[in-house]
Length: 162
Image 1: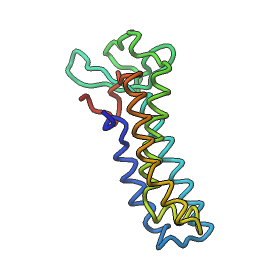
Image 2: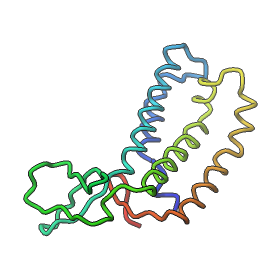
Image 3: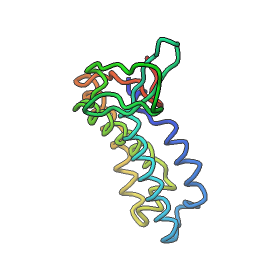
């Protein structure tokens, strides 16, 4: 079930984009800034995409939108298709929990890359190795438990129905 929180596309972007900046773990201040910006953008993207949802219109097409307190705000304005007014399309606590869990899973996976941790935490390689032995496991346990308490009901952009 954790696959719904695994931000594969964000992790792929991080891996490909961080290669020029991380080198062998010895980074300049500009490289460190670029890695921080890349991590921040990927985390924001992970968080944002958990507030999207979609519905299938009468024409068979899938329409996506942003979940708000008033309902689904469809990305394409002026649609001839009526947007459902269900409670399911309103933002709630579960959405924030899922978005936070997605960011936690992303950070756990991103920090398992030695090039990134060696660049961000120079001189603390042994400490980071010790932390990273248990951190992904703990994130997995916590997210699995929260997933049982807050089941997934959204199938927005980047999330597939199981």
